[in-house]
Length: 93
Image 1 (tube, rainbow, N blue to C red):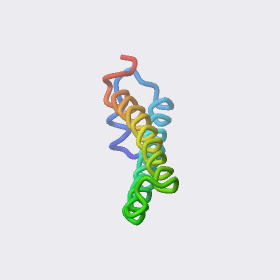
Image 2: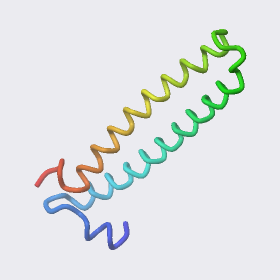
Image 3: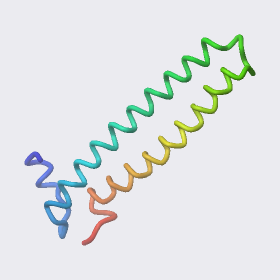
Image 4: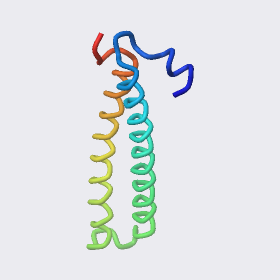
């Protein structure tokens, strides 16, 4: 934890809990990035398969994009909740 992060700790929050939330925020941000990369990969695959639109192979990529976007939306909501706690808006006070 950096000094700036330490000084930004919300009042009433335990330092250990705050440090755990910071680590979880970093991991969640990495997950969002990975999911976004996977979505980009699938979208590129769809561009390559544009002439096969409607085929089983094309539809598998469409379904995979839907699953990845749903998962990314869920992780983004989790990230927002963690950020709110770190900002002192959703945690104990």
